[in-house]
Length: 276
Image 1 (cartoon, rainbow, N blue to C red):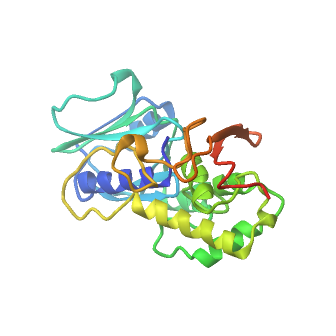
Image 2: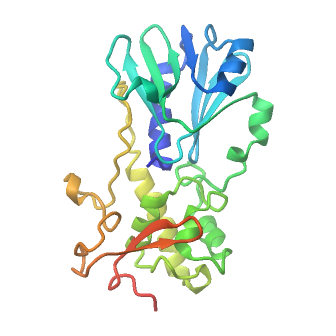
């Protein structure tokens, strides 16, 4: 389930593998991408940079061509050395970008578009709220933006990329738990301290899961994340996916309910996060 941290790490790894290198081969199973590639081939271009914009990932090629992708629930980018066996089936492949050393494969990517710099600037991926992972992120501004969504439930607000960019379904529940805020409370009911806590934990958790990696190691991002600080795979999260299990703080059973018109699953502790 790719969220902003996954896209950030994918962009970082793809950048290490591709930036400054000439594309030797490009393959697309997406009709619109293949059509543009037929007219303006990607092969022969140089990758100039790879960027994350919230949950969007943009690969910039020389000659003013940008490949924009969104993973939704199940897409992913993999990085392989030439000749290395793929970890997913060939039928899931949507695009391949090859250089002399690396083969970068987009698997099950549901949204893929080509843009120029001009059309990208007008795209909705550039009209999103402040990216939680951006250096320029302002937690006070984030708290104000959340508070402005007065009549909406806080967990729904956290998923709105127009308010804040990068937070997804896992972090939504984890942030509310850490801030001791019931996820179904209206934004208007939150105190200044609760709003500040939500902005703080949102930033803190996302940064912790994209910890600086100054090594030259190039790896496929696994998408795993943790909020508890534990290295144990079974102890990584506070509440997400733990329906009926005891709260790691108080021992009460974790609850789950579908939320909003999109019926996204929301998890919380009824004791640590009272409705008030």
